[in-house]
View 1 (tube, rainbow, N blue to C red):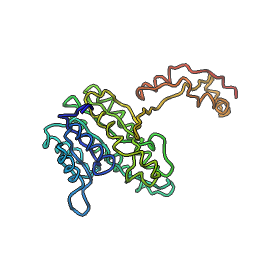
View 2: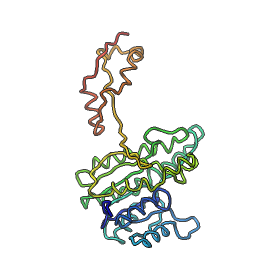
View 3: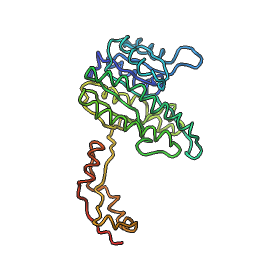
View 4: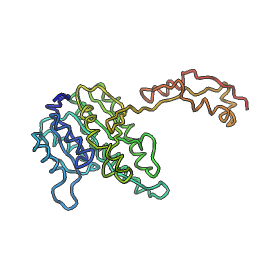
Length: 304
């Protein structure tokens, strides 16, 4: 096939029973990767959906094993890592896809409900990622993908816990990228747009038809490739479109007499304070702080 091969690479995909995770697992396997398929165990105790995904992959000539578990379990990452090592002898990539939805305005939620969303979306990702990341550092190579959302980038009405948990994951991906770069480990975040069980009630049939999960899957396979050099990025993908999302800072203003600064001065300066003309993209929080201290934005005199 003309697409870049993933032959010989071993990739773990969480939440791979349906929707985006299923599309990712099938696409990775079709490109030659051996896939560790994770889904939640069935409450009934019957075979997990991971088994049927493995059957699909092996029937098409691919290689896969099932590892059903709840990602928020303390030992989830250890077990997924061991499954990859026992089944295929190595691990090269991790796709964190598992997540929990939410649809309730903040003032109607309890603290327990908010924590339950974080338990799966954020701590479930950390639990899976940490031992695998440590192993990748030791072996000197690896690719980690963390699933965020437009809700995490910009917020969505009625999704406070979901939005904030997904925003936290962007920070996690950035730190892994910064700390893992010297050891050959790259981490990126992906905000996918796709018709899934989580999104189908929010989009029309016409829009949903343009957003099959299969249109996002090649982006994931690309990010799992050793040849892909992206690190610390957040991509938005869906419907055959891919774009970069970043957090930028405008130049702002500086006041000549900060000791005399009054709220009326801030009212007067609201335009230049909010302006993004001449924006910058700090590579990390330390650089942002240094630039804030030493840059020379337009100066205003505090006159109040």
